[in-house]
Image (cartoon, rainbow, N blue to C red; front, side):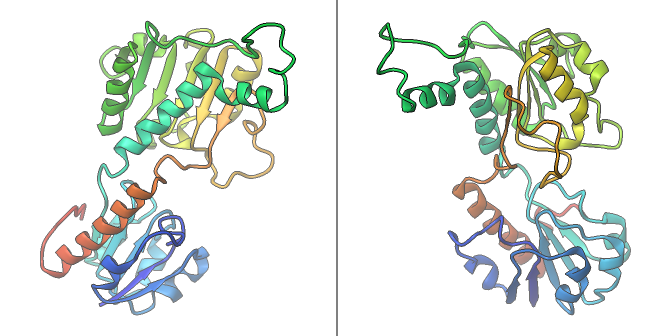
Length: 303
């Protein structure tokens, strides 16, 4: 069994072991693979794993030995499923591996925006507390989460976990699929839905106009859900008080990006899924999926 991983670095930059996959065959790892080199690098391999790299029809059709495609993630919209199916190639993914991590990152944004920890830490590091007139001081308003409302769009595993955490903070939760108006009018609105052809760009100027004035938008789902220029204008105008984004339309973003550098917009580089424990789970499940396929099983098969 020849196994190739085209974009292995983000899953394991060197702090984990590849032994679970290596035990299944001859494993070749590439940190990153340009699209035009994908078919060449897959070559006569029986199995290929990708995290974010595209496996398009032209690549798949150039790899006649390929029998298994492993998505090292939950989403697999970067794989041409129809082309794989026509070539009788199995596809398996990793369902719900990052639920706790993404929910945690969602609240990392919410708590940072509510408590302004980094702003006040910077003020102390800058020496402002030494010369303060009082025992405490504030550089930005702080927000109590208890009693506030959180709207959730996308009530799958992650959305449910976020709701659980929110209720522990004393927040009221409004589920978009159950009460659309209440969710959109919430103090905080968090996105946890996939980006489909139908909902790409649905968070636009019209949608934002219907949100509560001064609301906070959180997106740890997909960058394509948001029209970035419209969100940037809403943040600059004060229609929204803040946003926390772990995803953008283009990753890495091109220069300039309308959201980068806006003071009330917190952006992290798609790291919600990155805790070491989670990445180890990715490797373990990738190996389990391939082992199941080799033994005639269908573990986490989508095709």
